[in-house]
Image 1 (cartoon, rainbow, N blue to C red):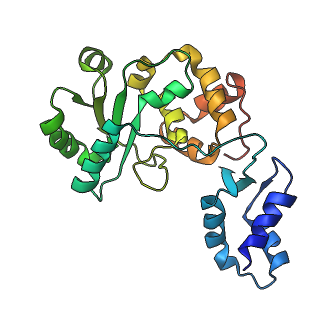
Image 2 (image 1 turned 90 degrees about the vertical axis):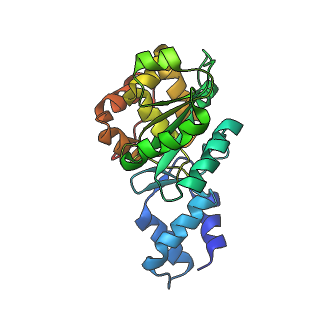
Image 3 (image 1 turned 45 degrees about the vertical axis):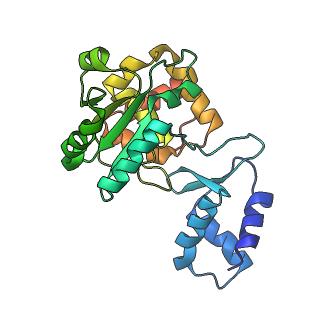
Length: 251
């Protein structure tokens, strides 16, 4: 298979904003190489996605990365404090499923800047207590487990670590499982009561519009998680009626 030729067809011949599905990608590839086997499609898709030639925008829907609109693939930046915690987690719990993210990431989108950073560690249910106990030995006084809004207000400070249970089917970023993509953050803005208490809700529409305008968002991934958190209908309505975001059909 001539991967370079496939990439060239996508980047040079595919119209802007056009989406393609797996079957259409097979047809493109077979025109280049009639002997292409459909069993190799998964490898081809993975390479095109990793090389950022295409991005996933919905269920079985892909779009070439549009350089003209300067849309990017979101790559979060962890603080030094968060990186230290991640290293400890990798050493102590290499097989545990967890996500780490920081509320300061939202300052990229909110006018009212969040003064005090919070580091969220969401851990699969059976490991939640173990992680809290382990980290408490070093971060005593600056770590909370599943706090309510009052506890967070009373005891939360700069870089407070918040340990909570990871909801099943929560999206994960790449390449590491702990990376937290924007799709998860967007849903949590609606589903996590503590998070809603820490940001200006009045800025949701503009902030989320900016997220979709600046970065590629996988709506299939977003709505799968939203459905798991019983927020699918609310978020779908908000995106279309408040944030001015076009919801992908079938997402």
